[in-house]
Length: 228
Image (cartoon, rainbow, N blue to C red; front, side, top):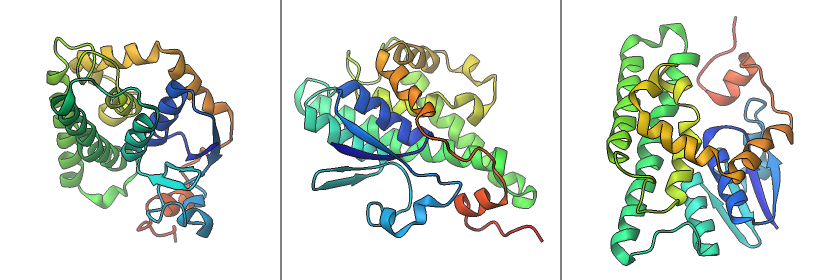
């Protein structure tokens, strides 16, 4: 059985969706990053980067959500586009676009909008808001006239997008979907899949620390000093 180290943030949730779509048996193992579980020595042996998610599949360990999606899809032979090298090239390009663009810039946008110290500066906030919005706009344009991100069928790229698209209002503001109708349409399409409901149901499996207090900030944003 696959051991799935997770919390409820976007990157673990897209892996949860993939596991549910594939119907692979897995054991969800909570890693409460606000309590600092990611720094435990046992977890560091699984993911030396001290992030979630990670999986252990027998003798194989994989960390980074997009690497996990690709590993699982190739293992099962599902949710990969047909069409040879051209289709694989498109899949890898958009999967890495989410991995290196959508995810990191959306995450930093959330940090500077909601959690950074007040003296962090307007430049950093403006920079990450701009780049997050720019990346979502690239995807929005790409999705024009398309049902899914790659080819004509649902793939792991759509799962990767779903993880973050659920958070667009928190990333860019409540009005953001008004300018991203194609992204919203894709999100709604994935949300209608039974596997998405099962992935979301993980919220009831384990209790995670909800408060973003000083302890949580120290564990998640290591540079923030305790209050005097």
